[in-house]
Figure 1 (spheres, rainbow, N blue to C red):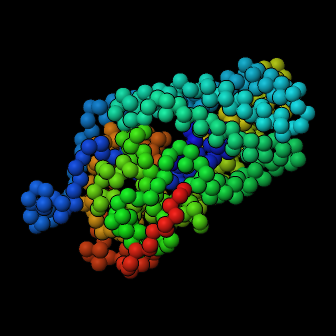
Figure 2: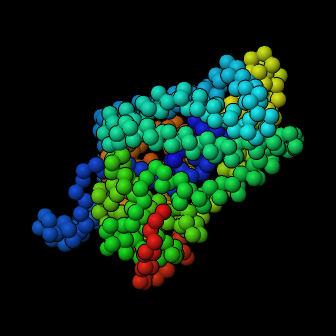
Figure 3: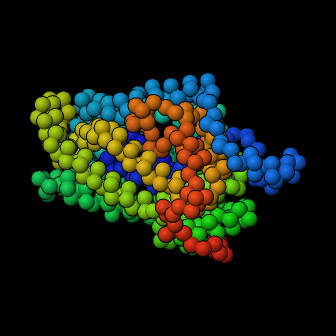
Length: 463
């Protein structure tokens, strides 16, 4: 659910993009054209005996060897990742050292004497400039490269429309949030970073609440599940996982992508189970139920709230680093190159953005390790909820082949780039984790309820 593009976003948008991406925890890309069948369907379609199917499913699912195309995608992706991170820090610094930020800030102050209106004008201009500078890279990474590898079906006009809407959301959130640290600096010059970090927690929670109903529909069409039998199975699984009163939405994504996504998001009145139509077409019911069991694990185990609190801590730390280091940059280059001499001047925003992005980059190994731990916990949760090792392992094997993934990347790649465990490791785990066969206690059994009648779908399925 990466609605806002990390890392080329302002400070709080950076926070929210990381938060929302981890809160949704997508299932990633899945098979393009695979006839997945349940055991019963195999029996009728291929005239296989149930016993033969059961024998096949007692064998471990092998980890597929990555194709040459997948390895090209993997290697070129590493280079692209380096370029994007250099650009993420370099472009704000470029805008700062060329004096553009200072000149735009001075222009905004001349146009209006009211501080907030001046900030709103400044931020809209600076966000547009940074977005336009990075547009060619975004276009290559998200449109041309994805089409070249067969991972996208979106038209260029549709992609450009999403890019423009993304910029609109960025500017609106900037108007609502980014002004806060500059006012705090003026009022609490020694502890502004702590106040901002603490305040980021309720703001992030509010964003999580409103995103499913106000932001997500800008980019996708949400409707009711077309397959009511499958919907009933998902709701029954949700009931057993302890998720009550859920609504299931199907997203029309096949016009944009060959990848798949499924997640549980929101809370209170906005709590919902979301599936892209692509995942429904490309996975059989058993595989899909495991994926949903995994996603439900994030909700039941409180990963969303834990990540909100963690990101609040990280934002506090990042702002503390800004507080300690920004003065040095401003004393050395502020008057001569930046046209900005005080951190409390909103024209110092590109400096704050570059420093926060650099801090988050350095913290990536720790953030990724924490996220991988959550993902492994949800793999365990999904297996204990469904007891379907074969479906789980085969879903990950499909994911690897169709998403052009390297199942066993090196430690450097895992450390810096992977928020999920390597697929080879996940397939191995799904093949072997069967505590119920030896009557060992389940790790998450306390969260499960006895199977019963599924919740009735809410007739109001408007997002």
